[in-house]
Length: 406
Image (tube, rainbow, N blue to C red; front, side):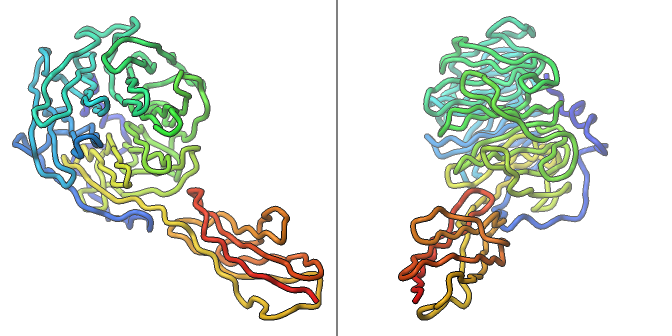
């Protein structure tokens, strides 16, 4: 099973849960909402929370505890509602559970130490329904060796499991019938060191996997064909240290629990870096070994802040950029080339400004936040359109002007 003590031990500089460094500011496109939970065994308290999942059907949040060996349910603002589970191998019991997912009116728990997936009703009672896999680790199809991540495809209802110690992803029907598997141990693009987290992009059906040993995010189609990957070991933006969980948010953003770097990183669905959030510590803008993450359709993110024994939340927004024109001509001009200039802003990063003259194609201006462009004018009226595009792919409102060349 995934033992958090041994997991923390392989992360650089981890001596205990109580690490503290000065807090860093969050990126402009995220807003701290708060956190809920404290260390303990009571209702609403946590002992090593590792998995978190938002349920759109019930508008609630489920949290699984690796050490506490239980599943708790909360309102979206962190009010305790109910719980199930205890330590053991019986139905509804857990031994080192790590990940949790929702879908098909069910809650799915990666019961890592028992080498199985357990299925519960997505209701306040959280009633046990079934389990598949087995108490003993196995590499046979449909069985597991320390499964850590579980996710449902909201469209097909199929379930994907990160079968960590078998270095593979397994795909099941909504009721646990084995469908397919892919991946072997290795360092190649379609191979895994240890797949820890798995998430499905409902819009595309593509499957994203956090490989905690290769320190990468890997993307596959719904059938397991390799598409792309990004990352690598390190602390720079876009690099990871033992990423353990990930989730897909609005507009296909990929939110990664960069566990060993004690931060959250956000990318677009193609792996283009957007923002990084947090530093190590117990403060409101800090994390201590985050392992799981879930994001609502509105961009509210829940993070299993394992070492701080709490669920931390932040609101992600990706507002459209803006573009402005400076000193636009107010009347006819008598030259074939017109120099345009202006500015562009965004809550993140403007990647380019584009200008279209007449019926031509959009062309990239020189500069981004301060831009310039030389427009070639024909005799008569020349309609001009200007727009900016940010790192997340959002496009500004188009600025239009009409220039008459005399």
